[in-house]
Image 1 (tube, rainbow, N blue to C red):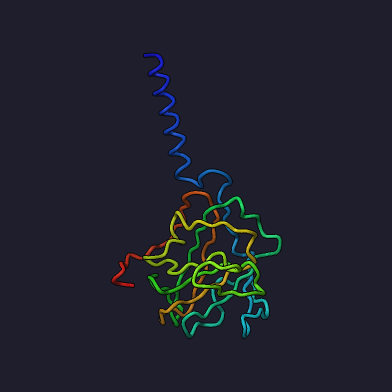
Image 2: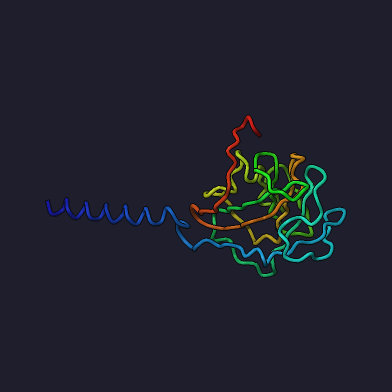
Length: 201
């Protein structure tokens, strides 16, 4: 009977500690919430070359006019080591030509993390040698990168930039990056996930 009581106590303690960790960042380091003011938008020149610095502006300065147009944001030099993180959560806001925020859905925007911003920003259909993260439908029904669990990542080295692209929705004229978080478990991003089902995408 005494042993049974000890076992019950151990199980209760394990349950309490398990609940506490599952709702936070998971095992390891606490979430790394990127201060967006440290990112710099650059003018995009032909051939995806970097132009003048536009400062810490998280929304595209040049309006989108066609599918797959985008803008680049550069991380500061000596960016934090992300090798200890296994998940990534990113959120966006979308705006029309009048600057009004529009409800997110599929086919609005995508995101690419780039190792070398002087190299290829596009990569293959999925992750590539210079594009370790390439995710579609950010904030949409089918997307996962904006959700609490985010996506699984494994960076060989810190990326130098983020390439933010419009997808095929002609209503999207501006995209604003609103959060970037590296973590090891669930992270409450506060993302507004679209309620549209596949039929509405």
